[in-house]
Length: 156
Ligand SMILES: [Cu+2]
Image (cartoon, rainbow, N blue to C red):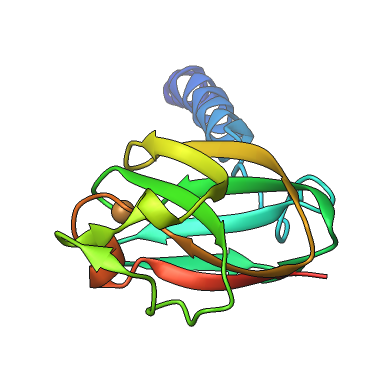
């Protein structure tokens, strides 16, 4: 009488315990999703394009030269203010253009290419036909050229 009572209680307990153990073991850890890796430099700019990075107050061109003919310029505004990009053919050093009222005096100069003012965080591009020679490249928004937004570019 006592033995059969024990068995009647014990057996269901063991079955339940092993079931819940199995349930625990069966729960798989959530799959970890590896973040997609950056994978290096990614898509490169269009072949032959010059990359221009504008900010306060520098202009960085890469590369700093191109073959004569059609030159595509992809400009990125990495700064906090609107900027523009002007190419002028000149043998002068980047900081030697005539300045009037804080800006490059464009009266005596002819732009070989211009990317009109565009906002911070944006990109803009232009395709210019450039002949061989030296160029000064700058931003002519008030005070920006004087502030340092100027560099040189060579067309071979
Ligand atoms: Cu500027």
